Length: 153
Image (tube, rainbow, N blue to C red; front, side, top):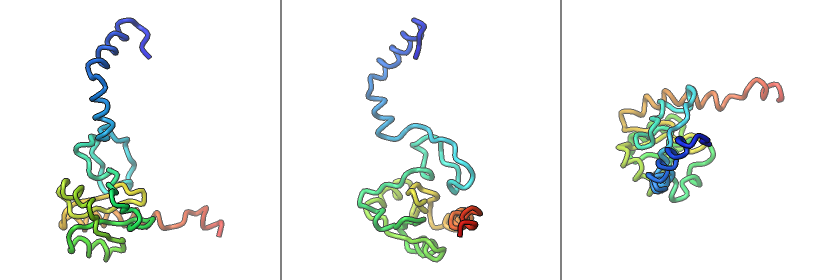
């Protein structure tokens, strides 16, 4: 809330210059920077700028993918080798269907999805082992009851 006349003019010039269409582009393409996340929220730190972001992105669900994934950690895979490795690690793995385009656009063949469906990790077949190594401690800590929960039982 600018109060000085020169700041008001500067603000108004800026807003007139972007004419609202740029703001719509930012909103439509989710171009706002991500907040900083703590250790374990994702396998790697998400890129702060949306055009560069894969990890930390909400995975698309155009064909009710959530109904096939269930309520916990899950994975999507385009290739058999990655799907098998993810499944062997204990993840439910499904074919992403139409949402596989997101993987192909980002040059990935698989993604591990958090229960809230944000991408925890993604990549090609050579990246699965490192992603699972980052995922295991997070999944185990989420599955372990807290001390308060243990006392309640």
